[in-house]
Image 1 (cartoon, helix red, strand yellow):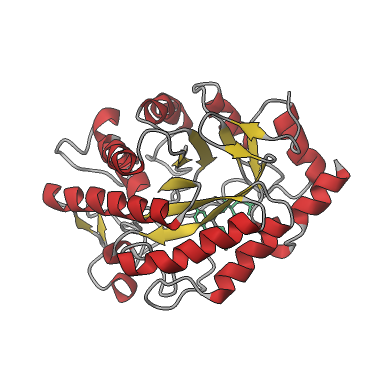
Image 2 (cartoon, helix red, strand yellow):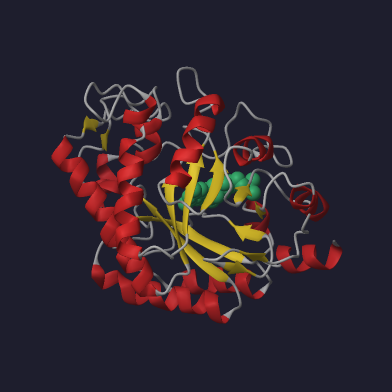
Length: 329
Ligand SMILES: Cc1cc2nc3c(=O)[nH]c(=O)nc-3n(C[C@H](O)[C@H](O)[C@H](O)COP(=O)(O)O)c2cc1C
């Protein structure tokens, strides 16, 4: 089995080691979603210190999907220049780069996104009060197209990969969740129907990127909430995501954020879920959740539980985490 320090080589992407900086929003943008100098410094510092892959934070693909006022955006062509500088800075600092594309769905407020938040149904995300407006099929088509255009911008900006956000109560996660999705049309009900929008987005993104470009999907593999998606159903869904063209699965979970209260915030709290999903697919899998200890991170890879390890808050706290970890193991 490989170690944390070993490269990961696929026919679409080569990473110099198995350490991933997962997407972490930092609200450093202007109100219009532009990349700022602060973004460049933030990501450059982690890339220079040896992270193999940096997944740039969730970036909204259209204004109705904006979650916070200073969120990074990828919703119009004018933003591509700044994104190109960011991708270039990460590359020059020695890391591979991906950018996470997202629509917040019901996980926002009218005050931020400028309209009544939208979702699969009129069911609010459990952590929010505002009732979302159910999308009609024409609007769903517009969202799919917005993902495609955002993907085109990501490729034009020079990112090495794209990650589609399908976790943490954002729009695609809401469609998959039986708790949030009460639709009676072809987008609701059966697993096949609830998965329809994510699969349409993957297909539309793939059409823009071409066949050989690496696509990641951040899959919320359990909602950790009564009536929501369970790991058992997620194990049926994961192979369908890869069959649709996903090359890497980034396994997270939680309808109300990435750190469900139901789980103690312990070392590797989502690793068992990543390991379970890994046994259903034949693409590389990223594990995440409370990982701070280099020896533990190395054991996740060395024991074959996941192919890559994402280290979030520990990298925010200590930009040099990767360098120090690689020296220690
Ligand atoms: C400040 C902050 C911002 C985050 N933003 C995102 C995001 O934009 N997209 C996403 O998928 N997850 C986001 N997350 C979740 C992280 O990617 C990660 O899954 C989570 O923090 C657990 O990993 P950790 O315990 O190593 O921090 C965020 C987490 C934090 C702490």
